[in-house]
Image 1 (cartoon, rainbow, N blue to C red):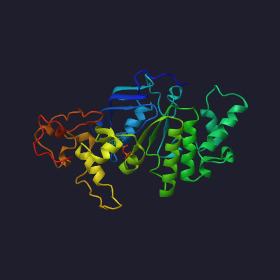
Image 2: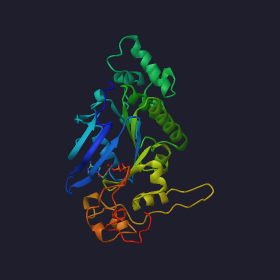
Image 3: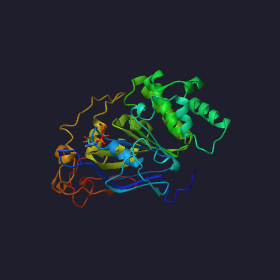
Image 4: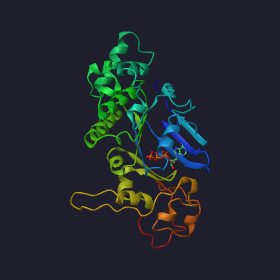
Length: 327
Ligand SMILES: Nc1ncnc2c1ncn2[C@@H]1O[C@H](COP(=O)(O)OP(=O)(O)OP(=O)(O)O)[C@@H](O)[C@H]1O
């Protein structure tokens, strides 16, 4: 199953747009031209406020819906959307873990039956049952769980089982969309540690989607920051955390309470995220940006800053004011 990847990327999202056409309303461009890559063995964190388009992007990335524009390739092959409830791309090894584990577990079937569904056909006979036991063991669940139904487990256990279900087809990559948001605090840490441990052990790629920058900071190699349908900054996580180059990334970092020797109360960003049906022209962050100036009314640049990128005119020395505050 592990075919070579030509370009070095496992998942390549290029100029993707997702537009909804709700009845009685104008079109909603939830994803407005996003490009993002995940390499084998890499964890990429995608972070942004609620409504910025993270789930819309995840759904098209995994093939559950078609993008309105742009292309998605996995292991060098285009992803063809097959629709909700059909397993779209198991043959290319991309699986999804949802916020609500019920979305990936059928409440009317035993856990064992559902895990067996995902085990590749190349595993035959008694080895299939053994594989199910191995999967349960990997996620820290007892073998007896195979005979039970999803409702017989707690939220944290269900998410472990959903992770086992995602691992069954031996994927090369996981897209995890807010996988711990619905769980209580103690289960959150356990499930994140489990997921990250498995991804690292199995050398998989992962796109980890979250509204929680402090969590993404803990686990991601690279962080992409999304605002109102666009990626505004992508950088190695440590660089982004210590020297953000987009004012929105700065605002997200400032919103995280700091403890330790230099405690700091969170500073919340003023204003609301605009409705994507009425997105501001030019830089979409402009109405909330403390540094907005002339060129921001134009399309923001996607500036390559050497291994990282930021869509902000402040980083363009040709146009930025000479007294530029750090983002
Ligand atoms: N089926 C739909 N029809 C119309 N608008 C939609 C639809 N699905 C999502 N949207 C809108 O698209 C935008 C992006 O939604 P999306 O769920 O992708 O964001 P998100 O960042 O994942 O937010 P959350 O974390 O709250 O799920 C929002 O404004 C949302 O209201």
